[in-house]
Image 1 (cartoon, rainbow, N blue to C red):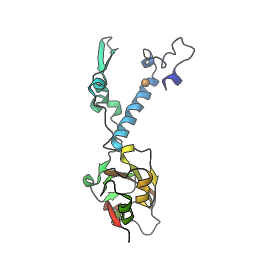
Image 2 (tube, rainbow, N blue to C red):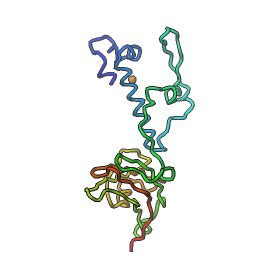
Image 3 (tube, protein in one colour):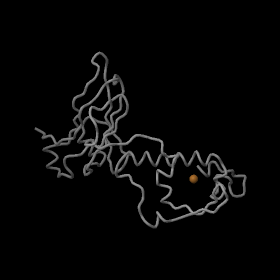
Image 4 (tube, helix red, strand yellow):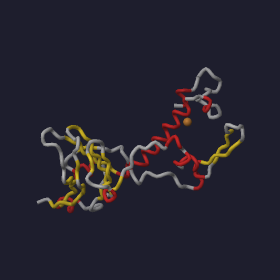
Length: 210
Ligand SMILES: [Cu+2]
């Protein structure tokens, strides 16, 4: 973004293309507000997505002039505190664990829920005997119109890169290498007829293959 927005005809690609001058371009503030916003969205997606905590990173610092021309020191840790970053405070929704979720849940907008998985890594033999199945219970919808939702399951450790949709949940989890994850991130996306539709429960259980 900095290289793109910097001016190649300037000696040092000012304004955006150089560290000392990037802040002179108003685009800098739009761009970095968006970076902060994406960071918050990424953290809200999964509890495994966290701010870095290493001391050498947290206490690395930079000096800038503030609006009163005073030299101020800013630490990396200041830049991840959402309370000091009002431009990133826009609410983007929080992903809750299933045990923290209040049911019934409305389906008229995209719902993300972390669902606990019953078992970790299992041998090939064990997998042949039982597989993970995703259960949605107490689905209520208007029977006078067609109703359709899409179910997406994410590998929590890998974030949202590996999204796939399938009704064969066990195969799906294998495909995305999510087998050892404690939680699966389940996303329900309304496609049609979900006005007023709700579910009263969601769970993953090991089901014996008969
Ligand atoms: Cu930048």
